[in-house]
Image (cartoon, rainbow, N blue to C red):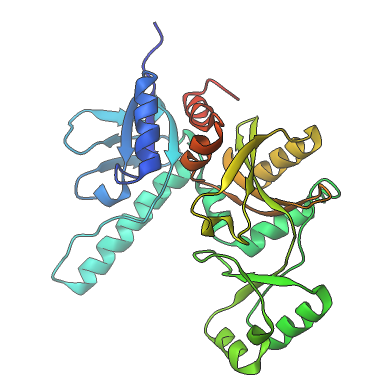
Length: 311
């Protein structure tokens, strides 16, 4: 009888997706544990011998779990660690620094199969650089890149819009929905806000959003049918499972590999002529809504990946 597999989830039970994956892994016979940064260093114990090995002692337990016995880690979310409230400011700063240093080092170097790993998340935190990586893949004509400008220069904005035509705008890193750029946004008064933060200006692409999920070598895709510019503004979008071409599937694998992701949701825009424009790839995509609305077996694909039962 094969040994029970230890799978960790970076996050905690307050996250719906993390809890769902926890339950599904347990149902498949895995021993599932939380790797919760908020529990370190007060409740979670770490022993790390760089280049050698290490172990974790989980909250409320005495027996250590050695790194070699961990099958995989599902990186759902990480918001740093919790630091003790020390009366001495210098000691508090040192404690916070040492806590972050060790836990981040664990995320970088713990020898296991990460879904996904440190590099993939760091790349995603710099979206302009991530987009540059994809552009260098030269995937045209299968995948095109919309004309894009990241800037806080008002003159550059006006020149870009004059050259490209219809555009949208959105945050550089994310956190707000896509909006259509209007003439009033190009006034000198309005563009003064760029002195406080840069913005992404991008060519508007007509058509429908397509989400392609990559789980190892497995490709699962769907189209979102909505009249909204940003599908997240539609409380009840129609989502339909679709088959994509072998060429597009191969391009998706190249995109995931370039961004160091083994599990991702890739966002495209499919034009009425059938062209695909790439927007971004998420290293920890929400997937339950897609699965519920169109029947894509996303939970199965992710759990298989974590258990090592798929490539």
